[in-house]
Amino acid sequence: MKKIILIFILIPGIIVAQSKVDSLQNLLETSTGNEKFDILLKLTEVLKKREPEQAIQYINEALKIAQN
Image (cartoon, rainbow, N blue to C red; front, top):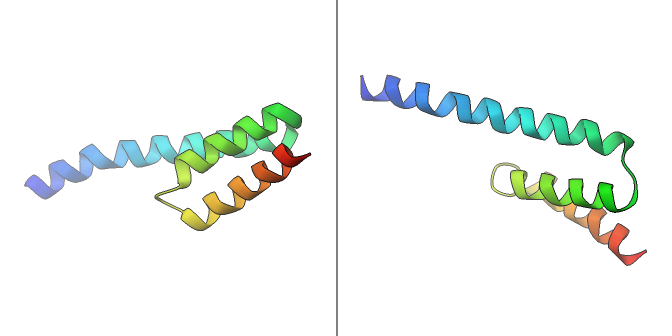
């Protein structure tokens, strides 16, 4: 019974996090400059524990923007 309750508590959080990632990725496609930089940082923050390789790609892209 405790496992079922735990599942119902965790699933909404996972869905919300994925929705946030999807929204940020959609914004990333049309953004430029500082806005793109900010979105890349937000994506890195959201993904750093769940998908670290993807987070590294985003932070590297943000670094390129910062260096220009």
